[in-house]
Image (cartoon, rainbow, N blue to C red; front, side):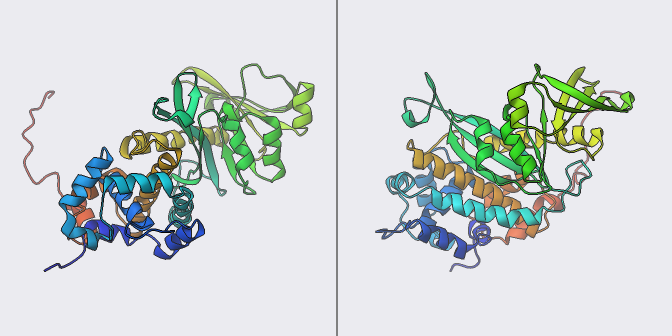
Length: 388
């Protein structure tokens, strides 16, 4: 007799089913599908992400070994690696992109009150990209260099909670700065970028949208100083200047004044020169905003280490994009569960617990709270003391 629900099915209940059906209908994803629906495909791929499966054969073997539990996990169709491979290759990847955007809209309000180390009343976003290397002989559509294939994951990360606000997947040849053309800028928000996004025509568009940017100047940067504001060099701020661009063509692209801040980091003995169109925040806050840009690098590192987005189950462009978007959806799902269940455990810990309990029929909250109830002082410590 089957009693209770598996951990996997309880986890999937946090997904908005109606919005998923809307995404499928928008791209006619279940057209001529008889037994293996888009939802079955999503569940199988989510299972692979949660349990770190290595291949389609691995997914098939694990799920078939638990065939008596598949119906209660929400998987109605018969799991076959050929069927799953065909679904990943044929069914429109935009279904899962749109569903990922739905999960982003669910997750961001849950983390709206999270801090990121800078006292700021406005929204703050970090923009960057990461390259996912691909074998050119297996992925010929992803040509990046002469003998190398790659795709890029461009991410606009909300610094409050490290939840991506926008994710765009492109071929590796697309330059980072072109992504600025695809963004809709929020008035009053701060956009923090590195030097790869330094294009004055595009930065001026941000300025015209009443938004703010913080970026770094290139080494050879020609400017005209208008004013120098007093600073306390003991804080690390070496100068705070109001400038205009020196060269004719850049000045045509950005005709307004800019703020130039030079900041010295004593720990690394390096100088950083920041450019921004905000003239009200203190230079230390501007430097702190740029420092918090590192969160997007940590986000990339985290998803590459804990999600399956470096080894792929299919070689077509559609299969790769499908897998990446489902991986992102799993990340967002775990982030949503963490907040809605008020869990203190990290996302990594939650993923590790789920990975070994997907088939168990234990209340999800009880399984995830296990780590919080374990006391490190239950057993006497027998470690020798090295220093007295």
